[in-house]
Image (cartoon, rainbow, N blue to C red):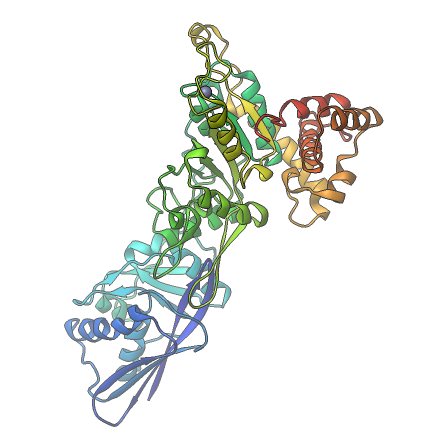
Length: 503
Ligand SMILES: [Zn+2]
């Protein structure tokens, strides 16, 4: 006798439907689970057996084999308990209707159904595979219901699940969530007084998706500016919002962020974060790191020089590819990591280089510090802006300046222009991704702008990389004023943000 239930395995954000087959044959009582399983699934045997007995059903006392197919797909986690249990129960109770349904959930020994992480990416996968109704733990129902045109039923126990499946006590579907646009922004540009240059740099960075480095002494407001930067980014589309929620679901972090939020995420890991915490990985089920939690949003690295060099080195690939590949014992995992990097650092180890108190650093420590700044991620940073300490009076007398709302309107307009113009170039949604020939063609500098670039190249000894950096920024500056060609003033402003000091 054979029964089948649909489950899901997830690697990175990619799910694979898994068919749980249960077969009973005559022979000595025995229960085996086959199909490339990890330890948690082997332990599932004990949980499923106890849950079935304690829920008041009879566990088959014959030779029971459960196969998770396809066998070559690696399967991890505890979400397989529930599908295994319903497949086993169906053998003795043909009244259970499993067709068109998928199951995700962990079982407690008393038969209650527990939530698992990663339900959202699994729900997306099963919906795409044709599952119409998904049965999950009650705590996971709201999350799974984010997936469009998927009916989600939350169950608290195996008994409730069985009563739903045999039709004796059908449960209502969980209503779909609605988008939340309000929460998420941590600061408004208007709350930061003065700092006009830094604000302009942030506007350019937001408009072109450029990575940015702020140099300034402690207490100059770098952190406040970084938080306000997030408020300049456009709302996420519903697809992007679901992508972000899927990463948070895998990390079990949906409590930190409403899954229906349409604001870009802001992550600010401390420099003591572990490499796995920042990049992703860990033992057991691979976890996304901070860089993936910042997907479609902002990763803020305060005191960037304090991060271990190996951590910064590991950021190079995600910054290039906008995704991170983690090597695992049973094949690689890929997580998305398309974020804008905002880094902040003191101008020198003592923090007073260029201010009235004067720098007390020795030449070698200063040289070493600049060396750390020009490290692995420097190549991917387009804008460098100095954030001086505000004079006490300026904090009160400087005008409040524009609100984030006003600046965001300009950012959105500039991004719309880029989406149309850059559309033909693969992955170059924003100007920050333009390279080489694409950049040359799309930037379209005027003759005067070209002359200024050539002159700057000569006088300032711009490297090829520095030249492209300036041109990319100039393209965004021109987009902000809705110009089709890059003019001389655009190049001049970009030259001021190229950050020669930290080269
Ligand atoms: Zn110093």
